[in-house]
Image 1 (cartoon, rainbow, N blue to C red):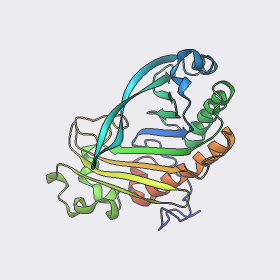
Image 2: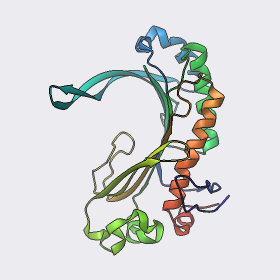
Image 3: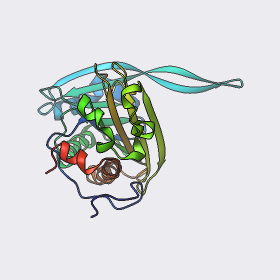
Image 4: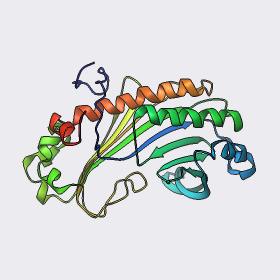
Length: 270
């Protein structure tokens, strides 16, 4: 495959280059399914917890606040909607599994490789099928968040990041700009993509759950690739991991399109 495609949305995906010191903050994969209301009951998910307890021994439940858009008369208003989520962590608490009434999510701050991540996810999906038994799929998603925090990297940002993602920052004014965040969304060969990127001031995050704020100025690249191509299909773990692999590859294609050879060298290309 090509080293870098000119079309990161529909072109061929570059071959993977392993980085020994990748600036990844978090990697997330998610499978959504039709709502199963009983998942909120601890007794209902107890067999799932027992099935994965050897790998994910820490277990808590929490209520989170989401947003729902409602129409009141002629006005469109956001409304806070509480929902319950079960959290499962590995022994070191760096890998987290989240189970809600309509989704299972795997995320880690210590990413090893896509193969390792997908193997973990297939294990979780197979145990979910055995215990909770979701019957259908709605959507799959894969998300990578990279962040450059070293101030020496920010000083030479145009040598690491392609000009298409730098906007005004390529002008040499990076040291004088406090914040410059951009969001784009579009179609891909596999589905859809949402990308958020730019310069963040100290203490700021575009998404604190995915990229907790740091005390330094930083540059962030957050690529969220998802697909509904399997909507309505049966909940098959191998099929789902195949779909996750495809959309992860598309996210990787965008990443490789956005960074330079100097970036790959800087972070330990093998």
